[in-house]
Image (cartoon, rainbow, N blue to C red):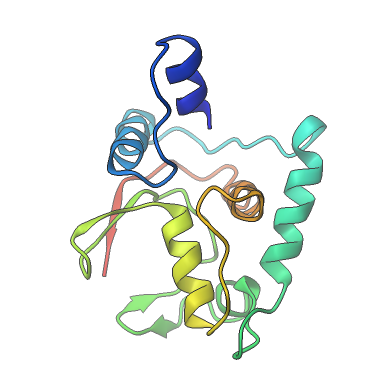
Length: 153
């Protein structure tokens, strides 16, 4: 959202689509420049209601499998799922280059994949639900180092 605000306000340019290649590449560039810096996501003030909504989504069970984000990332972190270890639900390594699809993937791509894997109806990239979830999950990494872009299977 900040990237597009800058593009529109300062550059008078068209906004990027939320998960477009241009947006993903710009996020990767910013992430590289921020490597090693601590994640410091504000969760109070005007974003508090959005953070609360994201937390609720994180703990809500979805799909036929009735799984929440917490079921995997809190109850089973460190265990293997397919060929990867489950994380504790932080996104300080995004965007992430996925070997299985040979491209950089954003958090909303991952969120859609997770909900799809529960056999549930997912939200759209850039939707208020995924923006809220992204804020909450990003805040779970407060104090960790920015590590993106990273690589995983």
